[in-house]
Length: 298
Length: 95
Image 1: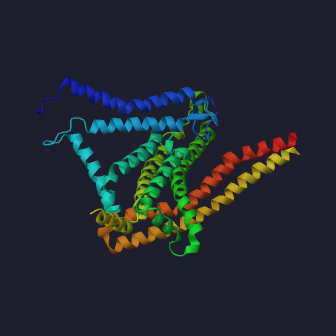
Image 2 (image 1 turned 90 degrees about the horizontal axis):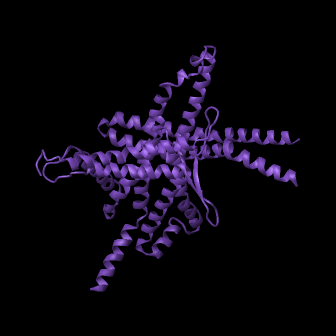
Image 3 (image 1 turned 45 degrees about the vertical axis):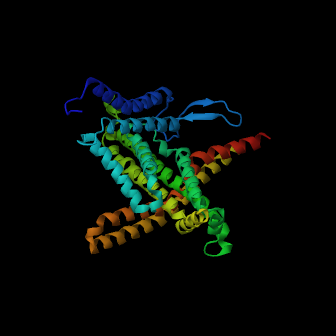
């Protein structure tokens, strides 16, 4: 493949992939505009409910949070395909450098924080990091961030809980059961409670941080609106109604509450996942067990 | 009488949310301590600045958890509890 062989098909696919990144966000905006009920002023609300599907026990609600998290997933898939499109072994393309940098960083993170046994965990952690970060960043476009809905984050935390338990079980159920009576036997109930507290605290941490940011942003927007009407309310017509103070000032706060807090929480969520999964894994027992089993077979 | 009852519910929910947020003191002190120690560590060994910063942010986020529990309870008290309590009151009055 020559350097100048960027054919029409290649470029067309590029454009398609870029559209795949951008269109979900626009679709989300359109859905939000279509479904938002008319209201007076600024309100703090949960996710909008788009439709509900009849189900035997309880109706399944398709909410803004679910739809937006699927849109984020499509968008991230588009980004990944775009970065690896036209990947070459000998002369790397520009976007290939970015893709390689991401992969290297994630593998370095895994190497630094997890046991050697978990080498294959890099894609999972990278996916979790990307999904969480982009979900929180979605609030920059004015859409509802899926991470500020407890259900979404609780789903991730439950997934992590199952992973932790699975890897704790690796050396057999006996070792797993024994790990509850760790310092002293009569502390077992407390250990069981702390086992279940892990996913709860992970979910509440992520959700609370993002939600508190959005609540504070809404409060500030409402306050600035009131200030504007206090100062400029006497002016005639358009000048009196337009919220001048709401231009620019909330954006500064949004850098902290949306960008910094969202990225930090994504990092912390994946970091805690790594630490819990790796920390719960009984490495010594597992490898002893494994060696023992091999000897028996031979 | 009903108005008084609803007023008491709303007021008590708002007061409860405010009292719950006293929990914000704990994480504030804890995070302040963590950042102070991190600054000391960076001052002593400027070369491990990056590692100290990441560990500090991690610790801060974990220390924040108790405050966030309080926040979740406060938000529930403000947005969820009044509606439910008033609904229960109305049902009982109907009987």
